[in-house]
Image (cartoon, helix red, strand yellow):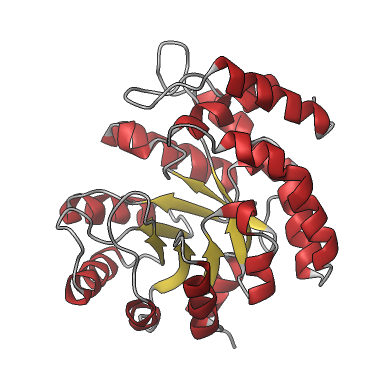
Length: 310
């Protein structure tokens, strides 16, 4: 019989979609738009075994939302995802008390897991600080926890040895790894095999190579609007057709290069622009995120045509 940890590990595989938070022209949350986007992803094939949804991540502009707005987004997500697709919620507050409070709320709403980053304000945190951080949140929320190793947002790139110690905790079920060190990621995957689910946090840029190394899935920002390509890449790689998966990678590469070009943060507005172009909900981004350029938006539209979705 599988343990509770093993059951949730099996659910957190495939294409991890960091959903945008759609806004109205007046910068209010577009609740109906959010429901529409979730339905679109579910109908496109994002489901247990092939992927899961993430709300309130970086792409979802979690840092630009009020506490009440974040709670409302979770409520909508649970309502739309329940028994249809695994749902993960970002709990990345700087204050550990706020993280615990919101983690308790998300757990009470019966989300599948919460995504938690290490302490980040105090420079490079010691291993003791990292272990204390996750242990306290685990003990007080009782949630399934995904470690968020996101080096772009803070100074720490969690050492493999620290991640191994965290993986031994019953409530740590997965790692979303955004390390820029691909060799280190390979070492991490091998060390954690069978212990927790390992998700490549750099997306299709690293695929199908991380899947070939043994990763269980990958983050995909473009899956917000072209999930069929991300799902096909994952499916081919899972079935051992890495040449076919690599062909999908090459097909997506021009889109990926434009999506993540320019100033960091522009990718959020570009993702929203692609979604609106395809009839999904997007809207503006909130300050102080940088705006995308007309050239970037034009290139996105061109690549959507080349992918035969526009």
